Image (tube, rainbow, N blue to C red; front, side):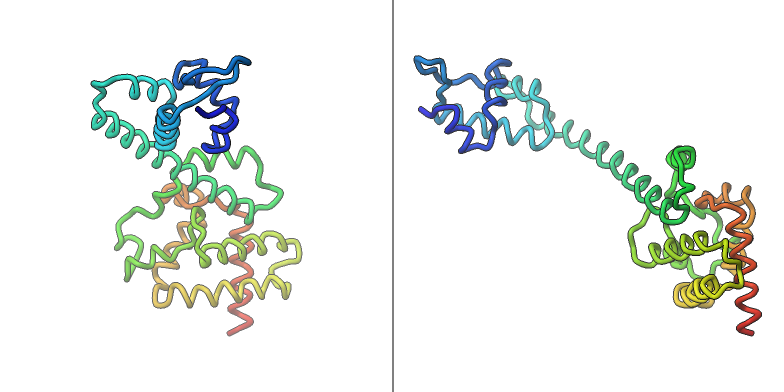
Amino acid sequence: MLHINEVKKMSGVSVRTLRYYDKIELLKPASKTQGGHRLYSNTELKKLQQIQFLKTIGFQLSEIKIMLESEEWDWSISLMKQLSYVMSEKDRLSKIEFNLRELINGIAIEGEEFRIKKIMSLYTRDSKDVLTYDREELNIKNSEVLEKLPNMTSSDPDSLEWIALLGQLKKYMHLGYNDTRIQNIIKRMDEKKGEDFNDEDAFLDKLWDIRMSPEESKKYNLYPIDQEVLNFMEKAYIHYIAKKG
């Protein structure tokens, strides 16, 4: 027979939890000492292991109690139901992950201006369905180019660099579009455009037209960027090309 404190050390289950299991009659001790301390045998230890395992795969204590007490419990049906529940939770958590990544990256772009109103507006949009339109309409030569677009829900290095560049551009807008710092940001954007979207000029032109229209951007489910920032970027890019030219 093992004292409750010994069971705690062996199982990692707290004394408080073991007392609660006793209270709800999920795991009763084999006996008690004269002082009222709970004692457990190997039978209770094995049952405790079963309880902890079933908790690990997502079952509630009320369900576990019935499962372990019933000799006619259909384990196959129960496990299938639990799998279905876990899969639905996985989808739900995946959506939350996408939203959190987009919100974090939104802060990287917009800094202090990123407030609860913007957070709510982003949370209610479907951030995964972007540019789901006819390939010919978008003037795409290679459909793989869509995978290279900056993704606000992603953690890949290319997307994060685009996001950081846009954030830096917005941060230093007050310097003017012809400032050296701004022009260096535009230069890196132009370099990345060549690295990631070589020979897709027609698509990029179409994408920019969409981006410059708030209505079209919403239609194609693009991440909402302030029009002021887009206009500034266009001026800075025109100045960069003219200077480069």
